[in-house]
Every structure is written in structure tokens, then in C-alpha cells.
Image (spheres, rainbow, N blue to C red):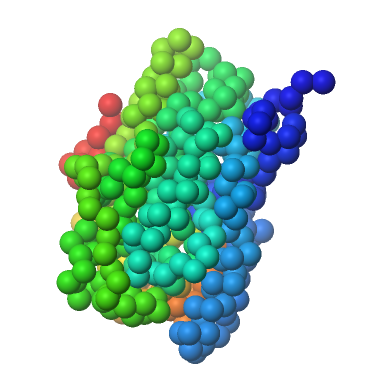
Length: 473
């Protein structure tokens, strides 16, 4: 009997290797979004998603104890060095597509992770597939304030990973501002496909109706990068931190504050030299994948449309405006807003309640300012519900609860900030299902509107987003 399909002779035995569920980081954005969209397309919510962190119920837990508990939890789910050699990216791609219900779809969204993409996919009645996936791996004797040591350890892991997956590019991100003390016990690796995975290709061939469009969504943000080796690059900090690249310079007061809160200091902070011009940040789409999608659509007779956003708030605002038009066209008010954050989202419950969703990437001031500016320029909403996800870390870039309350204050009649997520903010953790619990309490507004047609959706996105930098081509 020959090797099982997807096995890699010399690396894993037939049928062996790690499942996608084991490989893809728990709580990572791509993982949550695929799960949420798959459930929405089945007509179910996200009540089964997420788990409560080890100290989430104890807002007053001292920082050293909280960091130790978080490190133990991270260690239980991170990959070992040996397991990185067992990662099969083809199997991960298959795990993503297998989550979607059987049937044929009017199109597919593929690309960078973004919560508004999940809402857009739900409104269009189509799946969302990620252009890459996140992993965490053990870093024995690691330190949050030693980025060069993180690079050295990550290079060995990336070498193991790339030996069996040459179709990947591995971006390593060392960001104490967004990961806190976990940046000193695990390394964060984002694997991006450089070509169209076989499972994706099969999904597009078998599950799309004739002529269905493929929408490629790209995060156009850039960040300084160190090219460590062929297929492996390294960045200190990330756009989602809410800080700028200069804030990760050794002399930065913001960096010193971040490192202190994560259990380190700035004495040993010596990041690698930047060896290339600013490149796409960790969630960008690889050019090779974009070309492969274009080649496949040309051969298969499917149109391809590309959507590039310069900042998360641009896409969030455009999709929120789109939902308002969609709901009103179906005879609904489009007058109730839910502001989601990070993993706190539930596309199906949003549709069930007839609400307008705006997704914040995280709890940074930058993210919250973007929703404030959008609300200030929008027709007022009768109600505004706000779900701020506690990031689990302390950072000078984070929005305080008064700023989140100001967002809720835009509601004319109802102004609600979820108390469960606010309790212990910003250092506790809240599972995805908290969004489901909050949205289930909203009144029903059924039936749901009929699915949006792609041309209508693109026209609405272009009208709303183009003035703010959203590019559709």
C-alpha cells in the first residue's frame, strides 16, 4: 500500500503527523474566523467556541502569578521542537475546508484574517479561507526581552517546518506589546502559503457554482522585517500592537513600560538589524498565492476580485455601512450597532438579531479611535452595544474603559458596555462565546435578509471604502 494522500515520505509515516486542530494556535484569529463563518453558514452560533483562561475570574490576581499561570497554559498547547517537523501545511488546509458544510457556494473569500471578512462572507453566503495560519512553539529558557535569542530559536524551528513544507513562508513575530509575557515562553510563527494549497484548489473546483467569484482580501499594512533565511523572516513588534516600529527601539519609553509589565527589562533588548525595506506585515498575502489564485481562476473561468485595506478600520467601516444598507433594503431598521473586538464576534447572531457589526482588531487606542471617527461621521444609531475584548496584557497603547464607554455613548437610546468583559479589563481573558451570550439577549429580527449579490456588495464597499483607502480591483 502506498503512502496516504498528504503524507510526506521521510518525514511522517502514512496517516501520521499532526492534525490541523493541534497545529493552528488556539485562539488565533484565522482559527476563530473559520469556525465562526462555518457555523454561520450552518445557521448556528458560536456558543461552543473558546475557553476561559486560568485566572480570568480573578481580576485582582498579582501580575507574577498571572504571568506564571498564562505561561503554563501556553506551554500545554504550544508545539514542541519535534512537532514542528511533523506539521503538514496541506493537512492544515484540508482541516480548514472540511469545517464548511457540504454544498456549492456562490463564491469564496480568501486572504488576510479580519473579523469584518467573517461578516461579509456570512452576508454573501460564502466561506472564508485564510491565506496562512498561526502557530506557537515552545521556547525553553526564553526571555521576553531578548529578541535576538528569539530569532535564533525561531530559525531552528522554521528550518524544521520548511523542510517538509517548501510552499510556505514563515514570519516570526516577537511582540511583547501584544503577547505580553508569552513572548518569552513561546515563539509566534505565522505560516503563509506561497501557492494555492491542494485542498483549497479542490474546494474551489468542487464547491463553487459555475462562474462564482473568488474575492482575495489583503491586509496592506507593512512593518520592518529582518530576512533571516530563505522562507523565514522576523519582525519585532507588529501593527496590531498599537505601537509604531520606532517604539520598539531600545531607547523607547513605551518599550520599557511594555517590558516591565511582561516581566522583563530593556537592558538586554538588542533587536536584529533590519535587512530589507518594510514588507507586508505578518497577515499579508504572499505574492505567490495571489498569482496562483489568478492562474486558477483564469483557467477555471471564475472571476477574481482583490480587496486591499490599509488599516483594519477601513474594512470594518465599509462592511458596517454595507450591513446597514442590506438590512434596510430588507425592510429592517439597521439602527442597532454591535461593536465587536478581537475574538468576540458571532456572525450568525448578528444576522439573527438584525444588527450592524463593526469589528475592532483589538483593544488598542488606535482601533477604538477608528470606530469613534466612523460613528462621528455616520447617521446615529438608536442602540450601541460594545464588547471590548480584554487583551490579557498591559500596554501604553491600550484604550481605557472610558474610551470604550465613549463609543457606547454614541447610541441615542441604548448605550451598553458589556460588564463581563469590562470586569478585570485589560488583564483577564474572555472566551468567544461571551459575544454569543450577549447577542442572544438581543430581540429576534427574522427572517434574515436574502444573501447579498457579489456585484451589489462590491459596489457598496467601493462607495463607502474607496474614500478611506479601500482598493477593489
